[in-house]
Image (cartoon, rainbow, N blue to C red; front, side, top):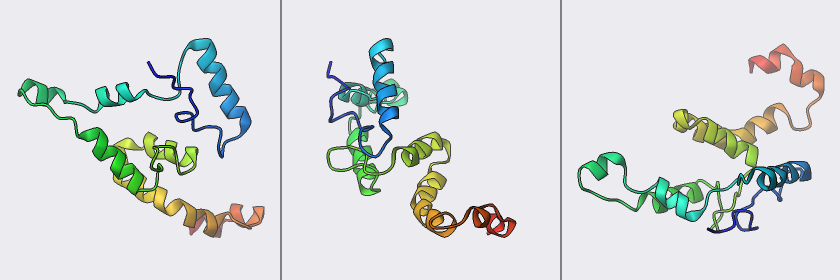
Length: 133
């Protein structure tokens, strides 16, 4: 199997705190748990569904379609490395049952940050009027 710890797969060095990257590597070493999924596993997870298999059909285009979509959304670059903040994309993943809302929230996060957080005082951020906006 391919090494998921290879720099091409390990996205936590850029833009994250060094402590997070070290913690993930420590878990990887001690538990043999990898923070990434191999390409073979991605193909297996996105291949023929049970319904298609039972109907005697097969499909293998979902992975490519998914990669095209997340690249067009700006979530990954052409090498499928994260192009956005890890925490933002983790939010999208965690909200997978509300995917349309997650995609729209992701698109609006930067504007919300600028409106409510960037160069704002603590009292502004904690004010009831700000919370009501």
